[in-house]
Length: 228
Image 1 (spheres, one colour):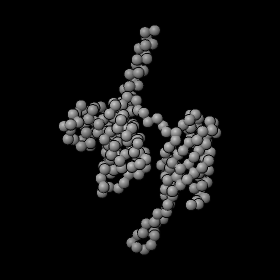
Image 2 (cartoon, rainbow, N blue to C red):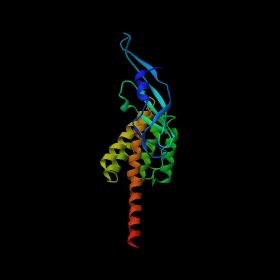
Image 3 (cartoon, helix red, strand yellow):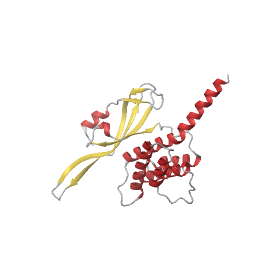
Image 4 (cartoon, rainbow, N blue to C red):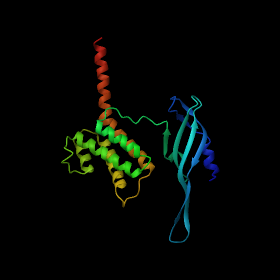
């Protein structure tokens, strides 16, 4: 499918941090492939009143600093400006390891990442499960006897002061998206919601688990310095 405006935009990149060498560079596109399709909306059987093109695009980019390649995917949607399109780096993969996670939550997060590109709805459900486990652990609730909804657990966690109100609001948004992914009558989640879910989940996990570990590590370093 030829689209001069889109191809012109694809011919260059802004500054991108290379996942191989760490340099921020303007990468050169060496290949691309798309599955863009036309969409039409028929209103009141009077013909197609609204028409647009949308679909995934894969770009293979070459780093001028290290001569290695990066594979990115974005969702082209001519209804929006390019800087509003959802972007995802497929290769090299970022390190998804989050420091300090309990073993069961770390396992669940890895399982969620495995289905991220296979089923957006399944990813949403798994992310909701992770947040539920965080609430249960931090509230010291027996998971076998828990009957509270995720929404109630989030409220209790916020009232306990173990997470700030801003993170509680993030967790509520995860719960809303999880509900969409879990029920057949709801709209399907898309890659845009998946990216938002992942970012929100990481923010919560890093606050609850990673930050205390890092503080503990720095305090240990300072104590060792004092002993020298």
